Amino acid sequence: MQRTWLLAGAISGGLAVAAGAFGAHALEGRAGLSERHLNAFKVGAQYQMNHALALVAVGLLPRRRAAAVAGWSFLTGTILFAGSLYLLALTQVGWWGAVTPIGGVLFLVGWSALITVGCRPIRNKSVQGQ
Image (tube, rainbow, N blue to C red; front, top):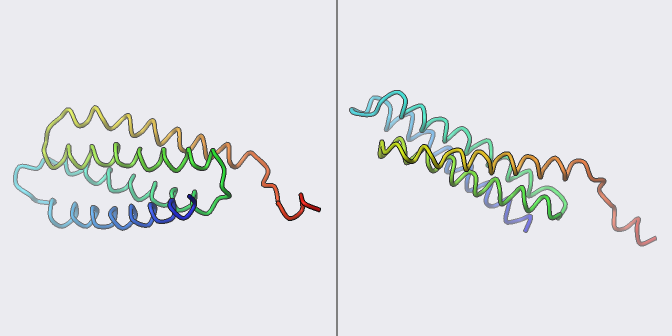
């Protein structure tokens, strides 16, 4: 599963770069797009990149249940948080903003799970077997 988190983080990071470039070059100055909507798009790209890096970090951790919870929370949180902000900006349909906090809560769950991974000692299996 660790390899999956590395791959998911790398893909998400690449998509975040593409989204950031799209927001900066294709959306900026677009007629009908308010500054508020452009900022929402940029925040989505920023949070997506931050949590792409978090997914990569999860992929480098020892295999633990809390690490899997963190990975799934970061991945699902990114889809809901960043995805809803992208859709809010592109469609200007306000109810997408109601989805964003769900993604934010999942980010908090992911960081909490990561804290539990950091609080537990790492057991070296080669030492245990001796």
